[in-house]
Image 1 (cartoon, rainbow, N blue to C red):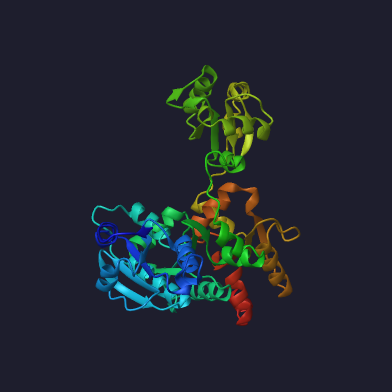
Image 2 (cartoon, one colour):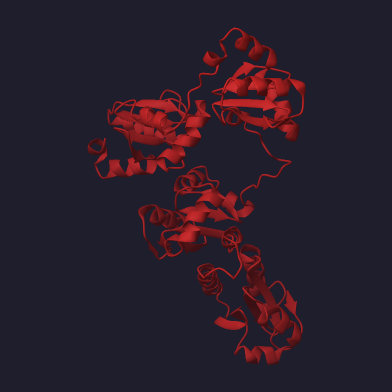
Length: 428
């Protein structure tokens, strides 16, 4: 925004509350300040990268608004003044883009660590924090002094890739630390956010680097799924509960006679089930017909497998076989405890050792095989309930996951570190 009067400066900058105002003082006589000049490009790039609801950029001609420039202590151009709540908190004079950027990032980071505004909800604050800069790293410690090896590795990786970022120390704010886990649906730290969207943790960023996609992600951002672009994961949906009923309406208010009848059968049989109203989502309604090769509703699933529609369920009930047909395996903590103890060394991976379905799973398999470590594996792609619930059970959000005698060892990073330190065999 170009400021053309003292009144405009005061109303938009001096009176701005909770906003970091970056004011660029320039003049026509300075070549770097001219339209299209070096500093004109710098302010444009900084604005594109760091501009947000809480970081605003302004241009002031120091010759025309000399009174404002003098009040802000400007002695030369170009100059960048940083104001928060009307008070100047920093100033950089001279054409020094790296120094200007560092000063800006310092103030953004400092502002993000401030206490929430009165009446501000946690979700509102998290939205503000995740959008406080183009690239935000939520970590233990800060970029200069990481407090855990994963945060340190993430900082090193971003620095190696030349990524400019601001950081937030989650150890200094427990509300943010716990709240962001739910907000992001990501249970561990560090977390990297680009353009207000979660990229992921250390493994996710390593994978982007390995695929040479980090720079593309930085420039284009993380695609936000909109209703028009929504991809329905039908496999996950039919596995959402041990017994899933896809019906018209809800169990409390069925919207067709067939749905009403199957609900009564399940309730009378004492079955616990979850339901999905296909009238509220046409993508599911049409997609599930092809997915199940079953053209009508209701549809009943057990452990992700189609049982059938009303006719099949009525027949099973009449023959006394419905209970056996719905004897679903409940994936609870007891089930997972048995599963992780199925073998002395258990690997939960994508695919199988013979046919891994991701690079991380392939690498961990090679490590175990190279060290002649006997193990059994479980393909989490084949069971969505295990895939999702094991993340909570282990408090570890990514795969692969390696267990020894029922205890989580960790993912690929941990295993690689154990190999480097010569401690893999002793840890298993």
